[in-house]
Image 1 (cartoon, rainbow, N blue to C red):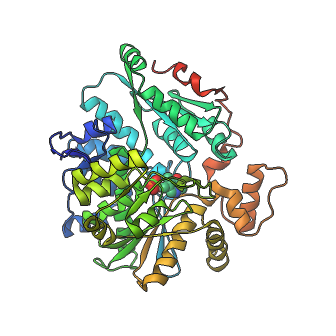
Image 2 (cartoon, rainbow, N blue to C red; image 1 turned 90 degrees about the vertical axis):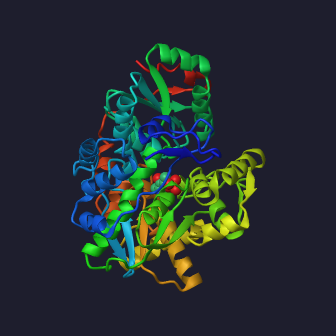
Length: 494
Ligand SMILES: *Cc1c(COP(=O)(O)O)cnc(C)c1O
């Protein structure tokens, strides 16, 4: 199977999956999409029903990554989703309200859903380097506002042929997130705090990527720079797996009959996770509608309602910070999938030049045939956490609470009571201050985050995820703080 850029109007430059994963972004600035989506037969689904998560993952990945050796993919999936990395199961389900199935994607090493992709993607990249005859080391650069950095560190540490440096804004991440990154193990990792905010760190990374002199010296020293964010196909494709796997689990548990429709709700930022759900439907998953859930940064629900994507608006810091995004990069994949590369190219040009675009009416009609958008403000989000704790004794993190609140708004607006698979994207302990406040606990006296975790656990009877608890006593390895201007001078490569 070949991959094409979302902006390739000639449909001329076809690359293999390994090349797409190695490149990340296409040279024309577009994102890679498979030429066609493989469709699962009833016999395929029957086979998947009887398998565990790693085997389902290997089966689905091998359909998209058909240039990879299937036995290698199977071994990688076994290792990536092993019980030592996902002690609570790779993607267990907890049913709420009778027919809202929370798909818990946060039982991995960093307690957020990005582990589902970042535990396997480094292995896919490592193989891609070998398959494309690449002898240089790939040096991954990440600027993070919190969750991505730690998930990337855990995924890439001690992977052959790869090194990783993560830059985070020194005062722009939570105490827990900082601690998680500073205590990372591994011989090929580096973590650097940057004075300034996330944009300063991000701009510093972009400057390194576009520094041709640095690239030349890197090449001479035997390495090249690469990125790990969700525009890479290698991060998107593993996310298709858990929607199909969840459906299989629900059928096996007798909660659905095979063929019954489901709606899928996803707390959305960059549009990667929900687009993966959409691709699962293209593969044959009986998904009816996709509920795109946003927080106050509701650029997507406005787009789905009015057809105008407008990032020229105030940016809000919320209690669901991983969705505080005004440019949802992966929406481009949906635009291209349903509207073609010409339209996509024009819309992306408009976004770049004016900060907004208006999608043609026929394209919006196709998008709205599958997607509905809703959003929650901060008080509504806290109310969902409080009520769900009170009524169901289920503790939601703020992102998942936004998702559940949007399911309720969708149901109230449409009367559509189709069972829902709700992507549950983070452990509530990862966002303990907001969660504790929402369920009425007193704020911590001295701001000690580990004391708060213990109190939240004591109050609710929920266990603190082991990887979060462990950071309290792990040695702090990385304490360097630099200014953005010093970023290109960090020793990379060797
Ligand atoms: C990254 C993230 C999201 C948003 O996912 P996208 O694929 O960017 O839409 C939602 N919740 C949490 C906890 C996240 O870390």
